[in-house]
Length: 406
Ligand SMILES: *Cc1c(COP(=O)(O)O)cnc(C)c1O
Image (tube, rainbow, N blue to C red; front, side, top):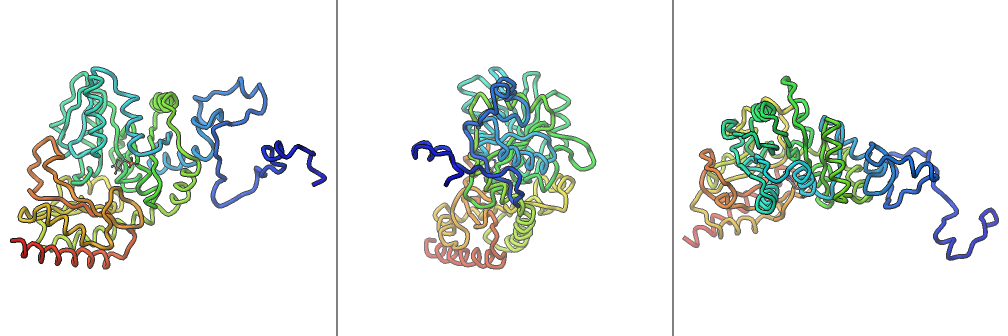
């Protein structure tokens, strides 16, 4: 104790005698938790430039922990700058609130992540933003006027998994000076490079990624990111991010950072399992349609094939049940599953199932979709044979139930 300055216990509890050395090397980067960042002296205080990258001035503007994860995400996705948000939906909101003003027109794919559409409909009512819906597999349905500011893309689209004509849509958007924002959650920066589509050297302006899904990989952490390649766009987003007080917990960031190392391996395994399920599901008589972009009959299959490297296709597959199965039947089916848990989200270790009624979810007619209730399977890290057996058992129970109630 003698080498410590003698202090009152009350002060000693606040000012620890030992500071961690700054130079030890560890496998995982050190975790910084900060609201306050302590300035060396008044010179450092007066020379802070919080709008610069890697300027340390206050917790909401970033710490080494958040910048490390942000750089990783930007690099994986092929961009340069990254901002973190407390959820994927918050990252979406950041993009919308940064770029959209009263009187602007925003274009949204009909199969966009549902809460993004809800968010935009809310902006439409309250702030006079004109929301237009296009068919993701038909570029001609995207008809921007001179008021068009932003187009939302998603590949593959939520729930029905159509793969859009990204090249066609981005080319048309650029020709009309419309900003392109891609929800990159499905591809995770692994299936394709949104900032440089293979061979065509075409880039979106902004990507949003629900890090909640594959990067977290645990089904336990919520986070989102916004990646850009152009500095000017990044700065616009950066200012919005700062004035809205958007920030993330250092602890959560460290968890995602830790999971990132295994993301590609998990993604490939889940893609592979989904393909095995796809092949099996296609042979089952209970379904009128199985939806997955790698299926040769899928809407947008050729666009998927052109853009996705290594034919990666994430771990999602949806089925549409024959119309003779009603909601009661489908609920019975979902409840009969044992490995597939009923819940939202995906990308974690546990396989998930969710049921949808497309009638309530789409603004346009989609002739490629069959009538019937839809169930989406999100593949976890279980052995695919066990997952298939789980679905087989549930289908047996469904058929028994269906026969009894006929
Ligand atoms: C989950 C998800 C989001 C939203 O992410 P949260 O972190 O749950 O808010 C956005 N887009 C897609 C495609 C998603 O799957």
